[in-house]
Structures are given as structure tokens and as C-alpha cells.
Image (cartoon, rainbow, N blue to C red; front, side, top):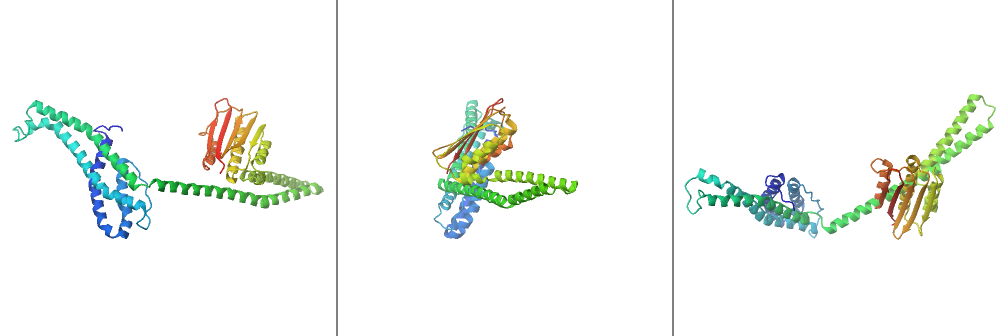
Length: 386
């Protein structure tokens, strides 16, 4: 524990925390004890009493003690822990405040004892003669020692109070584990729902707008081939409409493929990545070794990681070749994307890489990037298969 200096802000904040702890604890305990006869009223008032203590810790210790829910019955462990803190707090605050106040007060008296002969020359009865330099020296040295120890004592008392408050006012280990489990399940549900929504949009576009564009392009192509006796402006308009419809169809297919390729659902990750590698503008060596398929959400994340990485290679790496390796080791899916390009890729400068990292982290995976200037660049990803 770092010892604060007597004149530092930390020392004054610790002292203020300890000194104010006694009246605050006394008032709250006095307000709470009569309510013990009325359990329902105490249960409703307890969060307000606890909020006062949390505010004190936040003001003087810059410590946030997370709240815990109070259930509607007395068997709740968190309610008993909070009640115990308000009962115990005066018993801890009283000796702490006395010790800290005594250390500061006695230290100041000792340091200023050399002024006593000037302010009150005659020695008092049953007191040392402060006009004696030896006696005054002992007082001054003792005062200096106490002033040096007072911040340490205040820090220790404040730390003890904070430790007790975290144990009794904050959530227990069981409550934290339950909260983490709830958040994990909630996040997994959101990710699965988003993936299911992407699949629905892909199916709607594939079965609806894409089919209409295909029909439109066929009709315009047929008109372009058969209506050769039309005036030149009309023929040019049909030709332009035909080309625009084909371009729109290509863009829609790319959009649908980017949302969630149908081949990923039907044939799995190997077939989907084979299509991505075949369309890449640089030669890609693909190796997929999977004894069984991971969950659909993990498959989708793995596909988009590889697809986005190959897109970045084509746009920025100036590479002549790339390699993609996908394998499963027990409950982990391992991805490796390598290129022999110019390197220099960083998470800070590339929003695409940040997006990949966020997508991986959303399913409790990890992404490691190695891209020195001059290359090569390697992206290693680990994903949980479940």
C-alpha cells in the first residue's frame, strides 16, 4: 500500500471518509433499527440507506460499489448482507474515527508545542514544563511521527471500510456468476437472432427481388435480340436498360452473398470458402479440415472473417498469393489467413479489421494480427465451436 503524504489530497480524502463515516453510520443505523419491527418498510427503505453509503465511497474513495437487487422476501442473502453492514458500520467507524482524529490532533499538538511557552509561560500543574527544550523536543518529534503516521492510518481505516462495504453492499460471487451467465445467454441470443435475421433477408432477396431482376434482365435481353427493327434511340434505351439490369443483378447477388450465402447453410464452411477463394483476385490456397460442423453462428463468423480478410488482401496488400487454413481442435475452430503482401496492417487504422475483431469477440473468440512493414501478414482466429 502506498503511503500518502500528510499534505496530499489522498490523505485529506481518506481522513474525511473516516471522520464522516461515524456520523453517517450512526444516523443510518439509528434510522434503520426502529424499522426492524416493520420488515416491509425496512425492505423498501434499505436501498435508500445503502445508496447514501455508496455515495460516500464514490465521493471520497472514487470507488463504485455496484448495487444488488433486493427481492421481496426476507430470505434474500443480499438484504441480510446490507442490513449487516449498516449494523456493523458504527462499530467499525467509531474506533477508526477516534484513532485517525487522535493521530492528527496529537500530531498537531506535539508539533506546535514549542508555542506553548510563548502563549502560556507559567507551567501548568501536573504537566511537563514546556519551557524545557528537552521536553519540547520530545513533543515535537512525537508530533512529527504522528503526523507521518496519520495518513497511513487513515488509508488503512478507509481501505478496511471499503473492503467491508464491497463484501456486504456489493453483489456476492454467486450473484456475479448468475449475472455473467445471464448476460452471456442474452448476448448469445442476440447474436443468434441477428444471424437468423440475416438469413431471412438473404432468402427474401434471393426468392423475391433477385428473381424479379433475373426475369427483367431476360426480358430485356430477349427484346434486345429480337426487336432489331426499332428506331436507334429505342434500341439504345433497351441496351442500356439491359446492361443496367445485369449490373443491378450482379450487385444484388454480391449483397445476398455478403449477408449470408445459401451454400453455407446447405453444404457447410468448406464449400462456402471454396467459392470465396475461387472468386478472389489473387491465388488462394485453401485447406479446410473439419471432422464435424460447428454451430451455424460460428460458421457464419468464420466465413465472414475469411471473406473480409481476402477482400482486404485484394484491396490493400498488393499480394501475389494468399493461404487460408481452417481446422478444428477439440472445441475450438482455428482460422489462419496469410498473404505475402506489403504488410503494415493495424487495428487502429483499419475499420475492417476492427470490425472483424469485434465480430470475433462477440462470440468469445480471439483474433491476433501480425503485419510488419514489408509483410507478410497473418491473421489467427480462435472461435469456440459451441
